[in-house]
Image 1 (cartoon, one colour):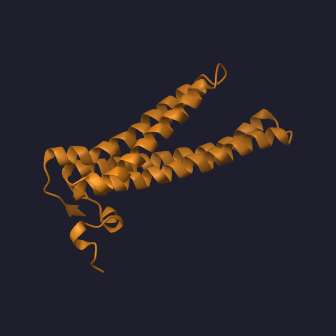
Image 2: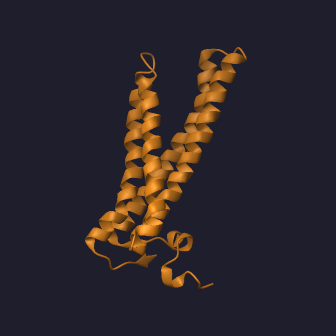
Image 3: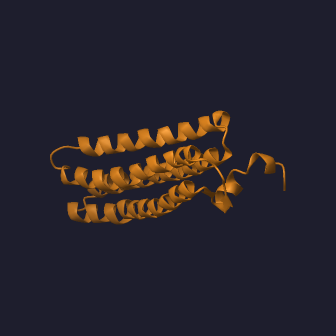
Length: 171
C-alpha cells in the first residue's frame, strides 16, 4: 500500500465513487430488491426501477472515472476512481450475465413444462444466489476501498492497475 499525504478535500473526492457504488450495492441491490420482490405480485415496476437506478449509477461511475483521466489533477483521486470503475465494470458484467441466465432459466423452465416452484428454485439457485454472493463480496471490498481512501492509502492492486505518473515508464 502507498500512503498519500493529501488534504481532506482530496480524500473526500477519492471516496465519492466508492460511496456511490456502495449505495448501489447496499441500498439498491439489497433493500430495494427485497422491497421489489415483496411487490412483485402487484407490479413489475419496482423491479424495473431498481434495475434502471442501478444502471444509471453504474453509468455515472464509469463516465466520471473516464473523465477523471483527463481532468483530475490528483493521482490519488484518479487512482481510486479508476479502481471503483473497474469494480463497477465487473458488477455490470455480473448484473447482465446472471440476469440473462436468470431470465433464460425462468422462461426456459416454463417453456419446458416445469412447475413454477421448480422453475423458481432453479432460477434462484443458479442465477440469483451467485449474484447476491457477488454483491456481498463487492460490498466488503468496496467498504475497505472507501476506508483506504478515507485514511489516504492506495491499495497495491490499484497502484499496479494505475501507476503514479512518475513511475509509468518504469519496468
